[in-house]
Image (cartoon, helix red, strand yellow):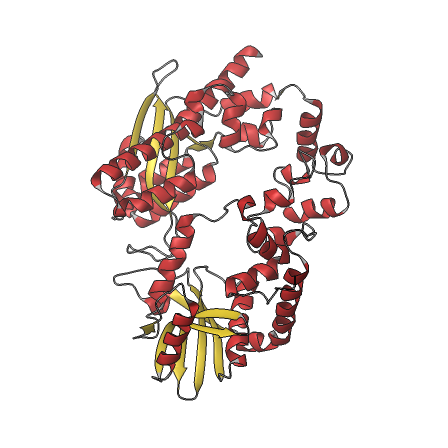
Length: 501
């Protein structure tokens, strides 16, 4: 304790402490307990956005990263003498508080701070981030004329060359930053006192709350909930987070406690099945009614999509879902063989036209098509139809004939303890086929879920031909399993009807 000299804060550490003070303590003493919650592709996306934003105001001078912060600070001070100019990644330190400014406009009569975010809206933590920068620079004696958040304009649609002035929105938050200065000074003092009092031998207590997931999912959630009964209120599928924390704060945490609460019957059903190990619930009449809506030939369809914060293709807006792959299993008649077709786009080109053309070749008009959670597939097809009028009639016909294979599970016509309240296909499949390695996504060699599929496809352009072949094979195997899983679920529902005839 005697050797405590204060916390060396960065803007990311400061923002972590605003969300929850204990995160800083955990980062220092319990880093092995951290469970990564942010995908590397999201971080890479942020880096891309930051790099493009640097030229937002024209020519700029950059401060390269150096492990020695003093090197970056000296470089910044040198560049500040060349006013007027634009400096990116300008670095400053005041009383153990460090920050780098994404874009700094350095004029003869003062400076402007621009904090760049890859989001499509401004959240409260962005205000904290930029206000912390204002705190440091104002205490160093700079005349700060403006503080702004630069963020993505998701209404921008690319046509031709990228227009970065339309790609970004800029929100002036100067008055907010000024109003937060006393709050920031007090927060920094609180952080230092907190870390001074709580060393490795003195773990501070912390209370669970909405701050555990807002604005960012905490990487220490598993650690902080390790002593809660299993299962508990946080394991109830579909319940609002605010409701979960209200019950937690009342001390109603275990399923044994929750079974007496006045709640949605779906939550109570999940609790009842898990406490009492109930037999499978089968609403045979409704399952039959649903299955009677399906007819031969029957097609099982699944898309994979990716998103770009910086649109690379004409007609694309930031974070638009772009389909790059589909899998299609189909059975043409009763007791017919299961057939399969698929499409996977080439890397680095707009995949939509070829995918749409192949789709109308592979699915005839006026046939029964199924999807699992059909809203996604229907949305993809609708956008393709809007984009390609010559294919629209056929595409919309496919869309109009889609049935949702999720219904028997989302409506609880079929329910089992193993579903844990969920109707996601990733829960339904192991619940229906618990010992089938062929249907286990964990057994796939490369891609195991939709997020991995998107990230894998986006990574192809930077890979060798041999690496691409391995990844492409992995993508095809994953998407193929998605639709084969649907076939097996459909078959299982048929078996349930036969067994209960």
